[in-house]
Image (cartoon, rainbow, N blue to C red; front, side):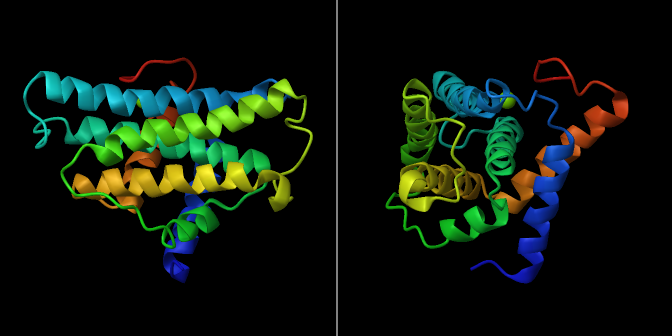
Length: 197
Ligand SMILES: [Mg+2]
């Protein structure tokens, strides 16, 4: 389990992330962070692919900050999903400590598994949408939503593993993310799109 200080940190991160969430909280709007998660996890993969293409992987020299930024974007989408579903992000983070990821450091495993796990979460949600089950049911019913919860935990566990491969903690990734969003809010450019606002 995470300690009280980290619990408080993730509680605050979730509040701060929610304060920058401007998408409509309608049935359709609630699907935004799932599609956003698919996009952001793909952006992480894209940065890794670029580094490989340029021959700078596994060191990713010069790409570390871009990767930290994209991993932070993934965490923002995870946090938004948690907020919409009434889940504490700090609880999800603490659950990741119970997961044992079998991988060898420096391999591309975590970087490939992250978009795959994000896809798994989007996939189970898409199936619920197809069956007309989403978002009518809350996630509190763990028997119905155990698969969804497992994928959510796995996404965060993989963001943490990727962060650690860069020599950065998951906490630091979230701190970077929220400072970027606060900076955008201060400059009044939170709406719209584009990485380098
Ligand atoms: Mg991004």
